[in-house]
Image 1: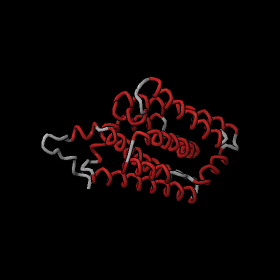
Image 2: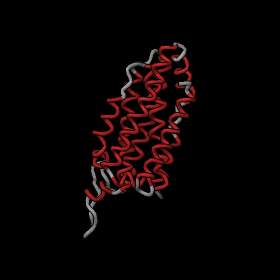
Image 3: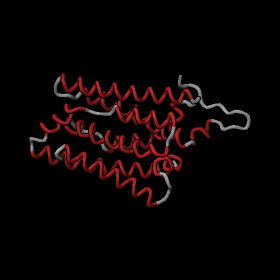
Image 4: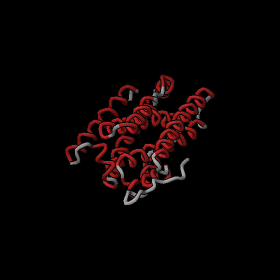
Length: 226
């Protein structure tokens, strides 16, 4: 059930207040991230060079859709329309995906690992600002985002070509820059979201979050041999 928005009690908060609530904002972002990941992985599966690759990415797409359904149902139980919660983030996420869209199969594989890794790291940063059912839900989503050895092995195969390796390494760095810029913009546009992720608001807190995201991304790049 996604049609019900949070209903105000006498003198209580209405839909606009619910949308501004920090945890609702975060879950709206998570939901749209999962929905976008499903769409992208399903599309990337179609360009796989063989049936094994197609099946692998299709399986990962199914996992992302399951995550979306979990967040949708959790919000519905709170009386919040998932479409209403996601709406503020559609433009920002779509712009990011458009700017770093993969052009071929190897880039799609790198996006699967590095893009999803950045999203997971951002969700992990938010955990300290959440509690109860919301925190448990985000933990479940994070715990089920493993891509297995298959994708990493395929990236290694592609990187046997030095030109492909150099291109993917550069693209991985570009992905980080675009993603961090999008995170900063989202924080500026949604102070409640920033408060959940940053903990204590302020320039130093934000800088520390961005530094950790960059460090984890660079470690992931190194693990891929890029």
